Length: 154
Picture 1 (cartoon, one colour):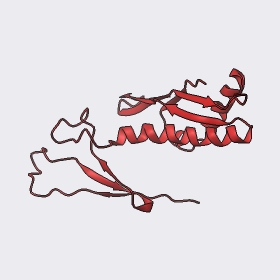
Picture 2 (cartoon, one colour):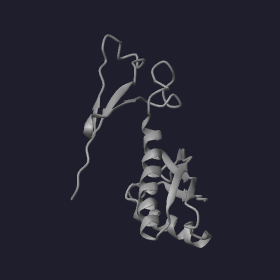
Picture 3 (cartoon, one colour):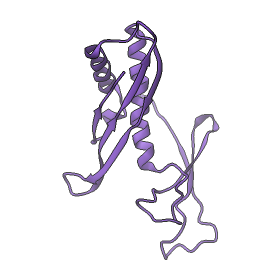
């Protein structure tokens, strides 16, 4: 069994609370000491109670799925002899009502664009197989109910 942890810190300060107009800005701290400004999404809680410059939980979930897929893809590509020079993704998560009528992240589309070193790129079927294997191994994607779609390209 492996465990992963994150620390979260929020303080009300001098702001009122019961009027529900308090700041949602807080901080995430990870191992190694990295601290990331976090907040609710301005799409969920209007400004100025949200901080649009901070990472919101919805963005973090989409980024975690994208990052997990990439890390498995890179490992699988290396084992297969494909030299990846660069990997970029413009992942998009969609929130809508789920089957229970609750708001949920129901779909995450990954759109990786991958550059390979000359002569090492897989063919289209090989690229699809790498993406399929990476998706199957991605424990973040395996942990959520949202549909994760990969629209990969080289």
